[in-house]
Length: 373
Ligand SMILES: Nc1ncnc2c1ncn2[C@@H]1O[C@H](COP(=O)(O)OP(=O)(O)OP(=O)(O)O)[C@@H](O)[C@H]1O
Ligand SMILES: [Mg+2]
Image (cartoon, rainbow, N blue to C red; front, side, top):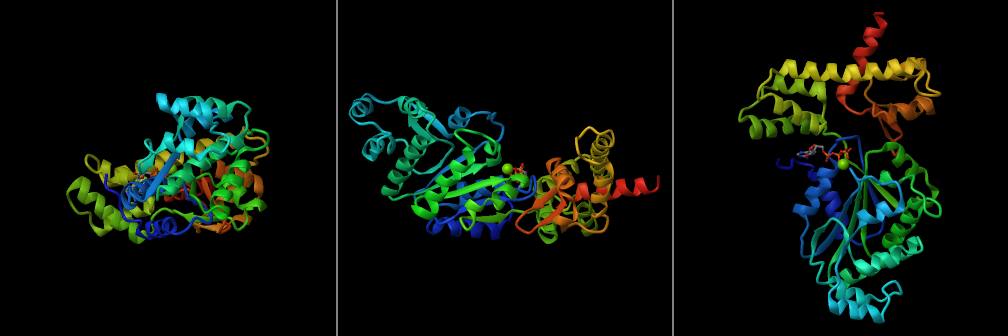
């Protein structure tokens, strides 16, 4: 499917990439708001492939429980040629020898988007020997410097960074990584670093980390606002249905699914064979029934420390508001609802809102049923 809009976010991110690297950027937002789609649109279609070398590392769907797993996604090994091998005999890559890397790499990296960092087979083994993260970083820095020397700007993007949030290697890996990213951006101005995540508890942790103060900047990729959502419906109905939707139909869709791109796509797709009111009612019932199941489990004390009454009281705050101050809900209940993807926490603004309009409608319906007994 063609990419739609996001011109403002695209302009912002492209202009960041066009200037000198100074900060680590966090792209965050509710689930399925289009963060991954946006960054992919930018790196594949909006950047000059002759000027940038982009490493886009996506941790989604990859099982990471230990350091080696992370290294495995980060790098891709390749066989060395005979000449590479001879050179390597004389120089150890880990001991700061960009010249060697040059011979390895320049043939491998010509510009554009890569999904891993190339590394000669034996070098990886050497780097991993003592579990020294430092060696890994040194290797990456050398590669980035080599790319820069060749007149190109490196850009490093890690999607779903929260997946390594709890990983330990001589302390938390994530802190070593952040320190390294600070080096790359604020200190060396060598490489752009973008991290993507929709895990708002992870973003909150990052946001409250003193070490990162003033070194990170945040870019919110939210669901579409109403105006854009309606235009997206026009765009999709043209593309998928070959017809126009009436204003009433569009308003109705918005009232159920709001500006969440994936839900709008789902509705329009189903319109090929299903009536609009049936589609929307079904989606709401589905969401409502999941919410009910969750609450039954809360009532049955399935989640330690989570009180049913507190959860209901928290949900009541959304009865006539989509967005509230995060401090109106106690810490445990807030964390629970955020973890369960009922609520999206925006730690930068200090606000909470349902993860989608659909969940919002489900919350309201549930509370109405609850009040009626
Ligand atoms: N601007 C857009 N134009 C067209 N399709 C879009 C757009 N934004 C998002 N989508 C579609 O919506 C779906 C969800 O988007 P995406 O996976 O990028 O969201 P995300 O914010 O990265 O989700 P997650 O929170 O799971 O990481 C994808 O199928 C994507 O193609
Ligand atoms: Mg994503």
